[in-house]
Length: 479
Ligand code: FAD
Image 1: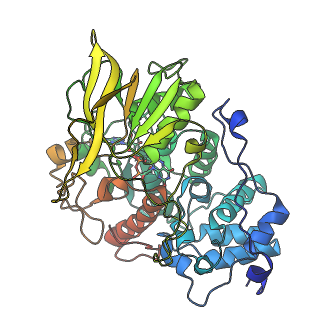
Image 2: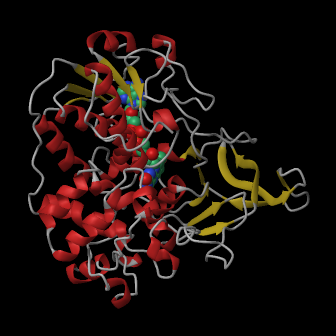
C-alpha cells in the first residue's frame, strides 16, 4: 500500500492546477495542467488502502484505485499504467472529464477531503502516452466472427477495442466526419483537446479496429443490411435528441439547441470550419439548464467574447457545503462548480421561463418570472413577477430525450423503452437476436465513465453470444 501514515502526514488536498482565468479564456486549450510530480506522489500517499475500498464501488468501471495510488506513490509508472488499463480502456478521457464518483466514495472523505483520485488517473493516462507505454494489443488468435459497432462515442470505442483485442473483426460506423461521438463534437477542447482522442484512435487502428466515417446506418446503409453482413451489431448511437422548450417565441432567430452551438464551435476550434454561424461575440447570452451542456455553453461563450452570460435554473440554489446532518458520502459532490462558472456569467435560480420575445423574427429577450412551488409539487411562474432579460442568443441545454435514430425501430423492429432508449435485456441484447445496445443509446444521456463501462460489459455479452463463453470483464449490468 501507499505510505501507511500518508493520510496523517498530508492532510491537505491539492487538485490539478488550472490556468489563470484571464489567460485561459483567450484560447480553447485545456483549462487544467499537469500536477507537479512531487505533489502528485504526496497526494497519492493519502490513499488509506481501505480494507473495503468503497472507491471501487463508486466507479462504474471498478477501477483498482488503491493499487495504482500505491504504484504512483512508489514511482512505478509502467505498472500503474498496466493496472489502470486492466479496468479502463481510456483513462485519458475519464481523467479529464469524469465527475469522479470514486472521490465521493473515498473513505478518507469522512474526515478529510477525499484523495485526488481523478488527477492521479489523469497523470497515469498521460504518462502512458508520454513514456510510450501504450502498445497496440494484438489478439492471440483471430476468430471467424464479425461485429459492427454503430456509433463511435466512448461506449462504441470501448466495445470495439475489447472485441478487436479478443480476436473479432470489428468495424465502427459513424455518421459524422470524425470518430469520437460527444468526445469529439460535444465536449469542448477546454475540457478535452481532440489530439487526446486522435492518439487513442491511432492505437485502436494499429490493433485492427476499422473505422467507417460519414456512414449513417439507417440511411446510407440499412440496419437490415448491416445485420446480414455482420454476426452481431452493437447500437452505440448515443442519446442526443435535445429537449425543447414549449413556450411562445421558440422559433425566433437566436433560440438554439445547445448542441448545435457546441458542435459548431468544436468544428471551428478543430479547424474544420472557418467561423461559427452561431457566434456569441458581443451578444447577450442566456443559457437554460445547469448541467455539463449548459456549463460548456458558458465556457464557449466566454471565449467567443459574449457581452453577458446568464444561466437560468428553475430550481432552488443547491447547498454549497455539506450540512452537518448530511452524512458521508454526500461530500464533496454536494455542489459542483465547473471551471466555466469561474470564468464569467451569472446564475439565477428560481427562474421560470414565460416567453421568448423578439422583433422582426429576431430574439431580443426572455420573459421570466419567479418560480412558485405549489403544494402538489408543481413549479409555476409567480403572477406579478414577470420581467424581461435582454438576450440575443438563448441556448437550450435542458437535457436529452433519447434516440434520434428512429430507423432502428422502423428497419429492424428493435424496441424503445419508455424513455426512447434502445431497450435491452440483462445481456445487453435488444429484442432482435444478435443486436445489442450500449452506452447512452441504452441508458439515456449519462457520463463517459458509464459509456466505457457499458461498452466493456456489452463486448463480453457479444463474445458470449457468438462463442458461448467469455473472459472479458463485465463491470456493470445494463442500467
Ligand atoms: P455518444 O458519445 O453520443 O456517441 C454516439 C455516436 O453515435 C455519435 O458520434 C453519433 O454521431 C453516432 N450515431 C448516432 N446514430 C448513428 C447512426 N444511425 N449511424 C452512425 N452513427 C450514428 N460526460 C462526462 O462524463 N463528463 C463531461 O464533462 C461531460 N460533458 C458533456 C458535455 C456535453 C455537451 C454533452 C452533450 C455530454 C457530456 N457528457 C459528459 C456526457 C457524455 O459525453 C456521454 O454520456 C457519452 O459521450 C456517451 O457516450 P456514447 O458512446 O454512448 O454516445
